[in-house]
Length: 412
Image (cartoon, rainbow, N blue to C red; front, side, top):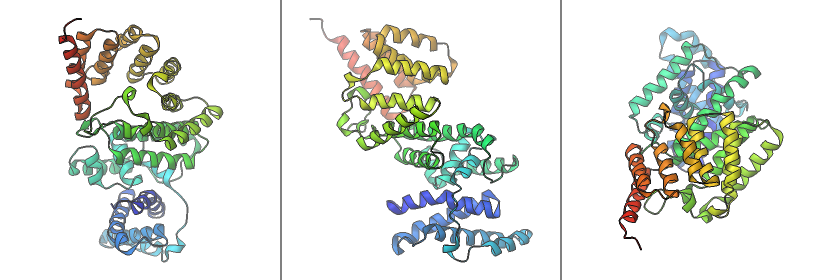
């Protein structure tokens, strides 16, 4: 894939072209392969020859020809070859301008698929990323990711998943899965679960782009607006999250002048409008919390009491250990570290967090606030041992080392 404007064009057009082909010919897997070949051809030719006047029509024409060639090579599919050849667009100007992005997203988030398969297929079919790019982002071999994508397409076929506009009832039932997949893609990009880098910009950028597409198609859905606002408000802090050496800089220590104010303004406007007109939902609550952080000019200006109250509401809407974990931080900041530690203690028996580094990292933070230096240092060490992210490990180890030095200093 090329860099710059041409790449943006390809990414935005990929789901539209794939949608036209699948709607016209069926056979999602064959159409998806043809679109990928067309994208690769564009990545090679456009930098040298320039972006065509009708890039969407160019991609559709090339992809349709590749699909026809594939069908022609299979003697057992002679009838479909003739139908595909007859339907092949002759002139890029004749390409219909219908946008199938949302239909394609729903297909990739078919309930028969596991979340990892939904993510991989969404990035490939809707995001326009190559298998190699997706594999690199998730630190797995390309062959492994290719198998995952292939199995996902086969599972959709076996489950009878077809390419047709989603009915209102189905949309209401499955929009949650679509938003959850985009949320997972963004989170993996914003704080990578493993590897040398804290952030993977290709994933956060793609999640935001796709969320914009869903919002463009469903502008009145409050949770869609909430998710897009949450992404923008969170990603606005990206430049301040790492130091010159790539090390993690915690929120309280970030240089807020480096935050992206344009993204913050857009995110605040989105969530303000959504809260005024839509039923409350989990993504809106998270966006409201992010907005409170973003609007505080200094860390000490943060309205922790309001944030703690929003986390209480979020815990009622979407209870889960990670929500409680974040709520414990907010409660600790608003009411004191003991109150936060008491809430955190309710998670000690939760098997879902038994080996997660964040439980001990939050405990260490609250213990440090409470002045329990030795216990805090021990918790930082445990958290560092558990994380698979190199930047997070270095940060946690540095906190533990700092507390060790403090404990070694003679009393004055």
